[in-house]
Image 1 (cartoon, rainbow, N blue to C red):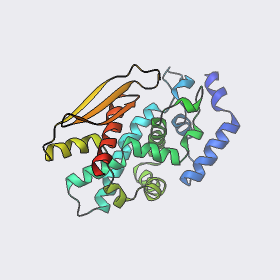
Image 2: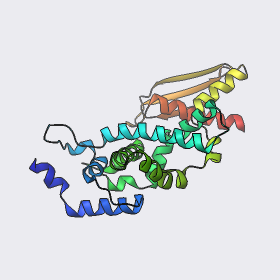
Image 3: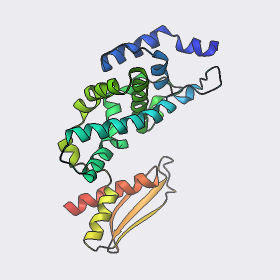
Image 4: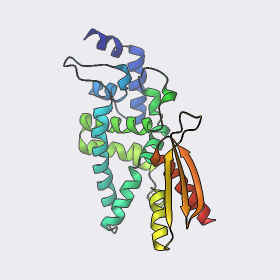
Length: 239
């Protein structure tokens, strides 16, 4: 399709993308259309000759699975004395959405994204989504073992500190529920739709501990509102 080649054959865009990828990954990508797709947002509405969308979403799905497998093996080798429970908790912290978003942002992957509209309008998850899509492209282009080596160099060594991650809290809500059960406290999450003036704030959460309000929060989703309120409650309990 001429429309596809017209968009994806812009030499300046390709030059910038593959120059930065070489600096980031340490090699020149062979299967270049994969990496173009990994940095193409669905808003571009590009399709192949069969009418299938060409964007990062399928690669993101693949990258998520590949990353989970590589992290599992990495932890298995690095922590020979850790039991199954600890390995599972460590993996969930490393592949958490918050961690992947942080790494994707630090790697400045959003700068390479081709999209329609302003990049500032995307939420934080876009950083982790692109990272997973890139991992999917690396896996197809280089194979499992090479993908593992590349990730150790650009993902694990710069951003993963196993000692600090062991002390990282993945879910403050889960931590608060566990604490309340252990200490026989009556914990209630009162979450409802927020009808305030801010259109970006959709939910309101109030946490009651033994029938007393402990923390409040507002956010774009029910999950985020509860997690933010739980985090505030945990910090207050520590004090």
